[in-house]
Image (tube, rainbow, N blue to C red):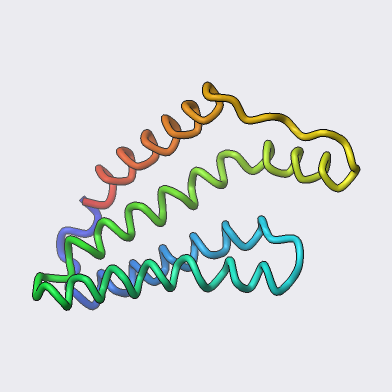
Length: 127
């Protein structure tokens, strides 16, 4: 809906911004600066390079792979924002030396359902 008239360059810019949002959301989970920098750079850059490399190797258009990359990166960043209070609580418990919550199957299912809902919502908004 919002990106109907984007060119290939526009999709690349949008994908880079989505990767930056993903990197920043992942960076907050690192405890030391080297880990934070690695989380900021490695996952978004690695997946972006893989996405572009695969589309160039097959000779396909960049639009569909960049659309999917943007969609997944933004969905992961938004889901991380939704679960920020819980993640902060668990990190504070760990730093205090107290036991953290054990993630059970229902928690994983809820997180997956939340990410799927965010994914579908963003798919309608972006496409």
